[in-house]
Amino acid sequence: MAREAGVSVPTASKVVNGREDVAPETRRRVTEALDRLGYVRRPRFDAAKAPRLVDLVVHSLESSWSGAVLHGVEEAAHDAGLEVVVSAALVRSRVGRPERGWLDKLVARGSSGVLFNLAELSDSQYAWLEQHRIPFVMIDPVQEPPEGVVSVGAANWQGGLTATEHLLSLGHERVAVIAGPRRTLCSSARVAGYRSALAAAGVRHRAEYVRHAGFDESVAHRRMLELLDLPEPPTAVFVCSDRMALGVYEALAERGLRVPDDISVVGFDDLPEARWASPALTTVRQPLSEMAATALRSLLRMMDGHHPESTRTELSTRLVERASTAAPRSA
Image 1: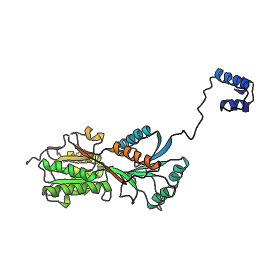
Image 2: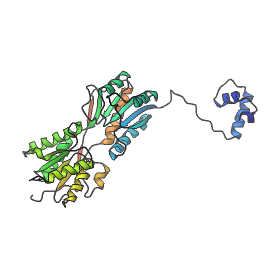
Image 3: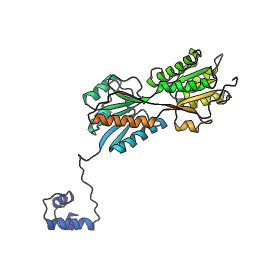
Image 4: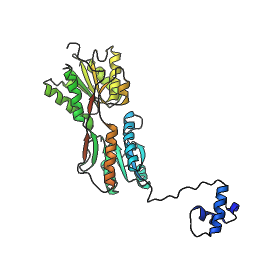
């Protein structure tokens, strides 16, 4: 291009980069050469006008659960003029320290804040974020976060209560629950709601009706078979995730049982799988995209120097009735 315009490479570079210390005639020759060669000028990078960057750290990118969270973050980030970097699962080192590679990249790319989804951070990771003054918000944290940490979740206790009340209202008294891991915040709250509904209805709580799995189909499948092998198996089951409910459906089919004719099933989440299941799954909807958007807006305020008045925000859940629940045969 410099040869085409009859100027030196440094002079052509000055014109391309918008420098002013070039004679008008020289600038004209270079500009005409650029046009003849079909050169497309790139806009100059202006750091002051560049969008702010936030990180979203998710447990996995393989589930529709994470997809709903990502959708909510993307929409809220677009409205706020933010860019989002998505990472799958924050990895810990064997000695419990923060994964240095990921944390160093967080600083290197100039992220203004972080959203953690279904994450369980170590004390050293919390300390690292505090030390580097990086604002962050937890979306549905695995365990109760330390005091002062901002988090957004669903009304899990109310959801468990509502699911169980629905089954009781149909006439079921032998209602079981298949929950997630005992130590997870959301799972323990849903089981507490289940127990509260039984107590309020005067229905006896049976310890053998409470089973814990790992939020996946295979373990839920085994837990359902265990319940069916009891001397007095349940006539209804509240399953603490839609994904687990698919494993329950499979176990019931193996035993030749039909939903809801032989046993009623209620899930939790209202993922697309709930509508695709056969029969369509009655479930408790937790507003995943809204939770994620709320977390992003809270993070944005923190990035602007405003700490939320409340560190815990819970969005309401609601029952979505479909075809997987009915009165027990004896009713």
